[in-house]
Image 1 (cartoon, rainbow, N blue to C red):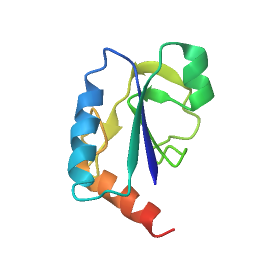
Image 2: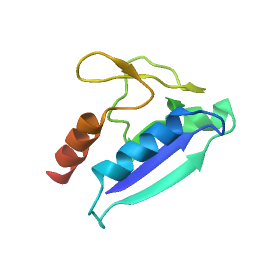
Image 3: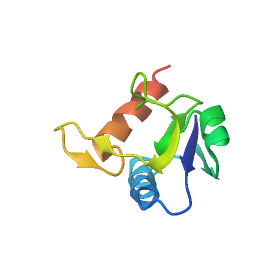
Image 4: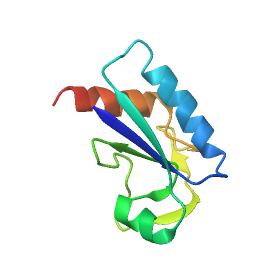
Length: 103
């Protein structure tokens, strides 16, 4: 499984996602995480970045919202209870990773 974290340089939500991914992946050596700083709109569009940070799991954004345009702004997520956060919750990340493992 390959994880890519697409982010802009000054977005504080990148640290939130990184911390949650670190916890979700604790004890796993089979996952590669690549962090890519995106600096312009054309690159954001090409990579499928829907705000910073965007997590791609094997090239796909599991948290994509239909019709959402690519952009460089800080991205907000809704957790399973509907609360706004700077990144998907730990439970959401674990669910996505477990689902991907099943394939």
